[in-house]
Image (cartoon, rainbow, N blue to C red; front, side, top):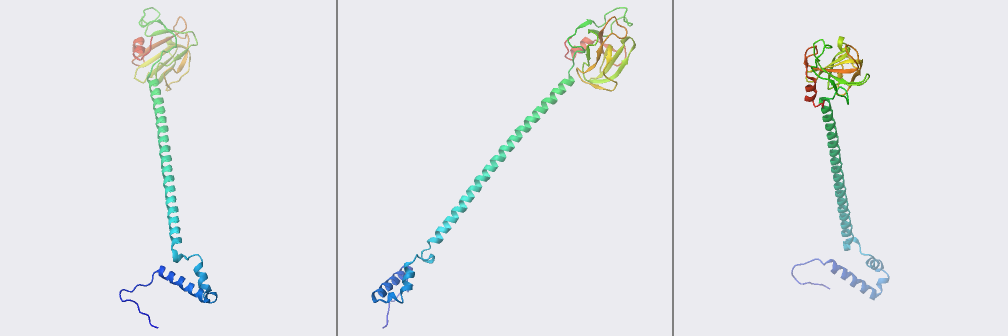
Length: 252
């Protein structure tokens, strides 16, 4: 028997049409009783879980799950990178603050040391002037006092009044044991009648450093410190020691 179909554009039957035809065929076979023999495998196949190629659901679910995992992983990596960057920035800022603090501390220490080295102190702490500059009398060979005397019991610490270099340390006739220091500004200071000397020629000294102990050596009537300010290391180049100390901030 011949079959004909309407003319026009021919299309292959859709998957739904094929599935419907298969189901119809299976029903027909069941009616004739053939389903119990030859059609059993085909029917069993149709009643099982749909194959992947029939539904396409497994591929879609798997692709979506993989995409979600990739997105989650990317988000996690981005968060970790952001946290690492924030931690690195915080560490950098902390290190910068610590460095700035160290530099400020070092700068303050340098400034303090520079100020100390440029400062002046009295040659004897807590003392006073017992004999003034240019005081007259026969006890001085020049006819007048070339320095000032600070009251000081024997053995009192004598300080360098400022920073400089020792150019003389030893016996000096009428001055007894004496020390002469060339100061950083080019002037000179002298300390006489010492009972002992604590420095040597060529040694650098700083303000307040001990250079010896007061005494009564040389031409003197009793223990004290004779202090002179000079324009050179030589006798006779003396200048007013009170004005000299006051010009350098020492209250005498």
